[in-house]
Image 1 (tube, one colour):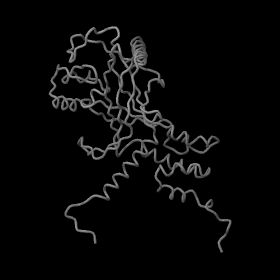
Image 2 (cartoon, rainbow, N blue to C red):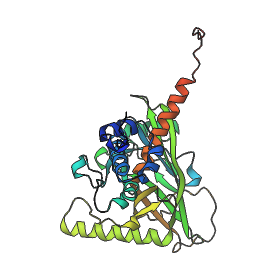
Image 3 (cartoon, rainbow, N blue to C red):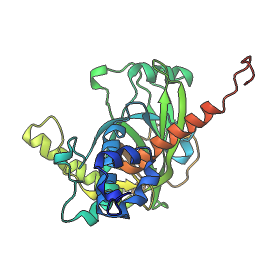
Image 4 (cartoon, rainbow, N blue to C red):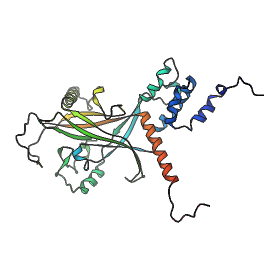
Length: 325
């Protein structure tokens, strides 16, 4: 006769983890509120999954950031993983372990952000793009809403390795905007061919005139200090105002640096503008420094991509294959 005192609580943690590991992250999250034991076990599983997933070893993060007028001309960029602040590689040192504030742990899990740095294209890639659009050294082409010079054969040591978007605001405008599309993709090794793509977020950020001015002044002050002290690199303290969030839930944000760009009257103008007010017109170069993505959102995107690939694989039709028995 079975012992009525024996319940599921007598099962060791290893058995629970073995069972719960087959659950998707979306199905695991509601189990956090079952009891303290499930709470700790689910957090441990999520912690392990985040450690494996956030570096994106099997995937790449693709960023499209463009002014609406340059949607078809602004190339996408890939992003390099920098880290996930607050996520330790060891359970014993992990801040997500059980403790007196365990009730706040689920919120701390969703508050973790993975940081990525947009990578500028190599000189060979830019030459390929330039040839595709028929550009030559010294020729002008439209980028964003401003004009830049295509210096394809410039000094490699002087080339900037930052991803920059140009923004201009006329006197009658209070802001400009950049469309932001972040996607999880798989790339065939040695090529630029995308094997799969899953959109994480598709939105936009508004660049207000006052915000651009404040950010440009901050960079100028830091540059002046670095020049006085003979530093090679400009050091700027992190500020929440540096990040513009793409969505209200603050799932994805762009950490930006802004520097002013003076208007060159020798540049050709494609459209007629009467009575230009040089005092009201402003131009900036916006540096895409980092892309911040909520870690749990990234984890869900990876799992969704794997589910879609498995679905398409199971439903694939092989021509010439023998009929099923």
